[in-house]
Length: 421
Ligand code: HAM
Image (cartoon, rainbow, N blue to C red; front, side, top):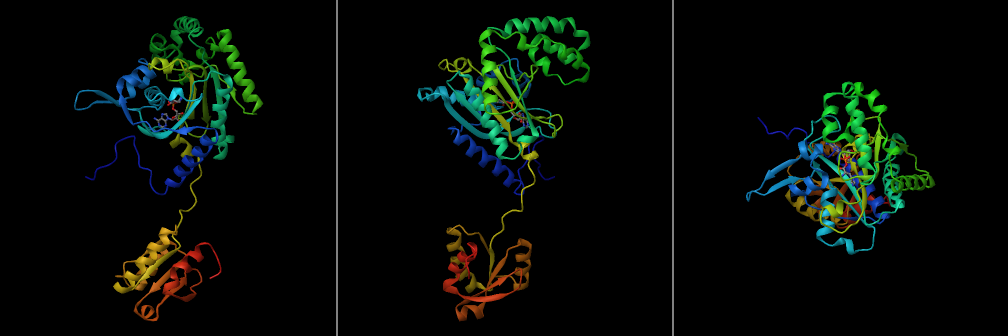
């Protein structure tokens, strides 16, 4: 039996690569226009980083991490997200001495042991952006603006909804939490088993339950927005003012809670109705206190991550792949030797051509040219070699013309730029 890829992970095949490249290229362009610099943290870290950073009672840490011991017995984990790693690097390398906010982004694979389904994988990829060292609510709005700019440039903004919430902070959330737990306990009979378990373990996450039976009760649950302290309420209202000033539409969603313990105040998700249950293409929020939790300075922060697989699923199939300009067909060894240097010459100048190996019949090579869909072939056999020529054939019209061999490289370059030949 041939070995297959592991469940929940997948290959990005050449036919899909152009869409991935486009998402990545547009992201880099947008992020850099807003002053974000790339950082590339490693793919595995000490397990403790995620346990501490993401939170011991989160689903991610409790159920979803790929954790293993290396040969020294140290516990390591494949990163389930990038924020903890980026902040670890920020502290470790003293990036906090730079002018603030320090703006960082990273692109790469993440690993979570989740039940695979459409849009949910065990290895997936994120575009991840973090801004560190600034509490001003205008930064929250800026980070959201980056996200919306990205999706605008990808032509997807109209198909997405921005959900926005504030989940308070250490000053106001504990009282809300208590009130919520009291409500959930009172109504435990109306809730599913998972909700009842979460009521005791991680009550805010109960609000995220998708079970239809739980909805009526959860809709009537107390709203965090009624419990925000003055500081959080003001911060939230200013974030909204700045978003309004930039004409960025959002829907205030008091039940939006996220699966990480590090968030405070602003949280947001970008949702689509087109991918079934996996409806979030991006999520993020503010995490003041997290840098300090990782033994760094008391720098606040905010960021988001975009799920690249989900974005690629929303994009139209890529246009046909780029084809080489020509197939160079040497008929025989001597012609091959001559065309090797021509091929090398034009390739080094950025022109893609295919080269035969001189051993096949012309008919077979022309077949190959048709399958490759190249617009031209260049034929050099013994007769042409003797005359010091190559034949250029237009595959569309069938028209052929000779070109001196020592001008072939220039002729091909001119054909690339569409100059008269
Ligand atoms: P997250 O919401 O866990 O946030 O992930 C962000 C996005 O990654 C999701 O909206 C989704 O599109 C994608 N995603 C998550 N899990 C999977 C999966 N199993 N398969 C495919 N796509 C997935 C974070 O990771 C935070 N670190 C975001 C953040 C950055 N907050 C502040 N800074």
